[in-house]
Image (cartoon, rainbow, N blue to C red; front, side, top):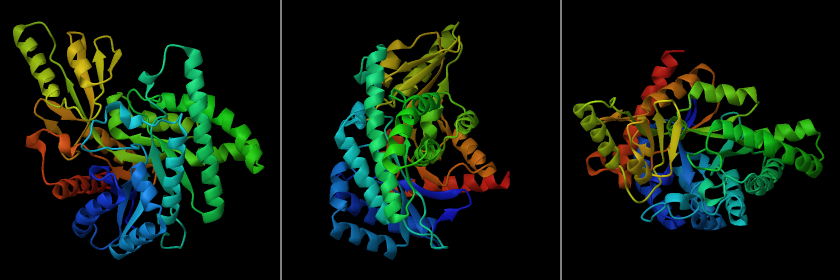
Amino acid sequence: MNNLALGHLGYCTNIHAGETWADHFASLQKAIPELKKRLSPDAPFGIGLRLSNIASEELELPENLIAFQHWLANNECYVFTMNGFPFGGFHNTVVKDQVHAPDWTTEARVEYTKRLFRILSVLLPVDELGNAIQGGISTSPLSYRYWFEWDQPAARDYIFSQTTQNILEVVADLMRLRQQTDRLMHLDLEPEPDGLIETTDEFITWFTDYLLPMGIDQISEQFGLTDEQAETAICEHVRLCFDVCHVAVGYEKPAEVLAKLKDYGLRVGKVQISAALKAEFPEPGSRSTAEGREIVKQAFAQFNEPTYLHQVVARTRSGELLRFADLPEALAAFDDNHVEWRAHFHVPIFISEYGVLKSTQDDIQTVLNLQATNKFTNQMEVETYTWDVLPADLKLGLVDSIDREMKWVYKSIGAARADE
């Protein structure tokens, strides 16, 4: 296994286009052997696999799954995690809020996720001691909050109850799969700006107010467990996907995120290594500073593109956080009260500055340092998927770009271990 000291490391294949399995597999065959040669010539190379719903249906066919297993073995690669957030088209189409569709209120999302876990249970390899490694699948934060009447408690309670019930259906499936295959797999919910679960605090609140109360009763009855055993099973099979970009956009501090989870006995399933855009605005008060503020605003405007949501969280003079559903709304609302912006745009992680804008690259190094000090997960996945929509001057060849991303992480892990 490409089991680095800090855990399994790979990159998410959502960077590759192709919504059918044949098209996506063709992209993997074109890129991964060269990346393996450059990045992990003497050890198996880890992959974070992304499958659309259509591709998952096709890959589950025995002939396709066996052929993929053989390809992985022949190329000394392995899958240890999957991205189950985007269900449908993710490239060459307008995604925006539809990245959440179908959401966790639907049976389609449940069946898609179950199918991904069935595939992962087959793909997960064993380690040097013959033990199956754990596997995780990241998923949406239940739904998109602007689809609902968020200011009405009864409506919120209904949506949380409905989505939680569907999550528990997957938990029960994971428990049965573990009994059948001896594979421990977990569903990793990924808080995101404007998701139904947006922050670590909201993840904890949902877990303690909905998932555990509903789940303990159901799981204990279904599997003949005590309440304590049912709670342990739920906490094993449902975890947090720590997307560094999303945490940074919300101005959350990585050490505080981990401390809060530990206080409640909750776990990180995987870290998605990703970076957002940020900038502080010059203090208003003169013509030159007004021009400087406009320059920063226009620098953000260069990243306004029509494919993905680029939520913005503005910090005001009073310390309040103002949330905007997309860059156009933030640009329209900009005023002298805004001190700093952070924008949800997964920029290349090996670049720290974009003119007057900066990336949240420092947060990645902080997370890797925390992992080196007290390992909190065994799964890390580089997730930069915006190559097709980057400004032209930031684009490189795809394989070369992934190579630079991964080498930057290797170097950063080395630095983190040196500081232990």
